Length: 373
Image (cartoon, rainbow, N blue to C red; front, side, top):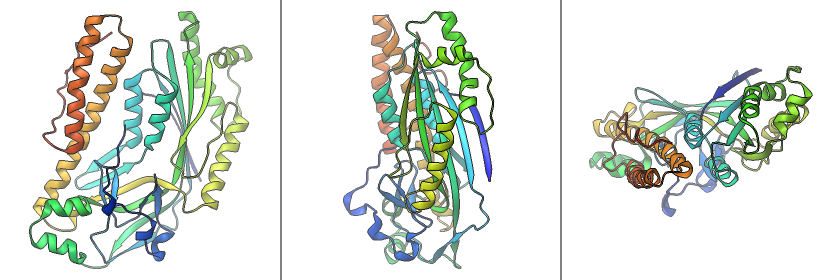
C-alpha cells in the first residue's frame, strides 16, 4: 500500500451544460459495464466515452469495438495533502492544481475536482488580510481500468455518417473531441480550517502561521509525534473554525477532524465506504486521447487542440479574476475599486469567450498588474 504526504503552500470550475437529449445517465450503460462506471455529480463516466474537458462532461461512445480491462496489480494508494491558502488568487490556484491537466501530444491526464468544494468554501469565508485557510485533503485510489481496442476502430452508424459527410463540428458536439482511455477509481474528501487574526497582534499571527504546518503534520500523519507545546496548539485552535467541506465520493459525508484519532478514523471510514459501495466511487484521474489519434483526421485534431487551448485560457482568466476580486474586496481606495470593477467586467467577458471557445485569447503576462492593494 503506497502512501504519500504532500505539504504545499498554494493558493472554478466547470459548469456542465448538457442538453436533455444528450444527457447520459445509468440507463445508457449496459449491465456488462456497470461495475466499471464512475458516477460524478450524477453523471456516468467509463472508458470509451467521449469527453469535453472544457464542458467537463461525457458524451456517448463513438467507437463500438472496445472493452474495459482491469489492471489487477494496481496498488491502493492514499495521499494526504495540506494546503495553506491566504487569498482568493491562491484559492483559485489551489483549485486549478486539483484539476491538474497534463498534456503530452494528443493525450491528457485529468485529475478531477468537485466544483461543490469551491462553492462551499465561498459560503463560509470571504478573504481579507486577517484571514487564512488551511485545506486538508484525503485521497484514496483503489482500482484502474483501461480501454482495449479490438482491431481497427469501428464507429457507430451515426458517427460514421458524420465523418463521411465531413460534419466534424456536429461530430464533436455529439461525441466530444476526445475519449476516455483509462480511469483510476477512488475518491477524495476535503476539510476546511479557517483562521481569523482580527484580534491578534502581528507577532501572534506570524507565530501561528509558522506553526500551522507542524500542527497539521501532527494530526494528518500516521506517525506518532508531538512537536508543538500545549500552549502553541491552544494558540492555533483559539482562532480556528473547522468544517467538513465536501467530497467527490457520492453519498459519503465527511466528518470533522481536529485530532489524530479522528484523522485515522476518517481514513478508515473512507476506505471502508469505497469497498462497501463500489459503484459510488468517483474518478480520481482520467486519461484521455484525441479522437484524431484513433480516427486519422485533421479536423478532429484541430478541434481537440482548440478545446485544450480554450480550456487553458479559461483557467488563466479565472486566476486573474480571483486576484482582481481580492483587490476589489479589500482596497480602501475608491479609485482602485472602480478600476478593479472595470477590469472584472472585462475579465468576465474573456471567461465567457473561453468557455464558449469563441474568440478566446490568452491573457498578456503583465495584464492588470497596475491593480494592486
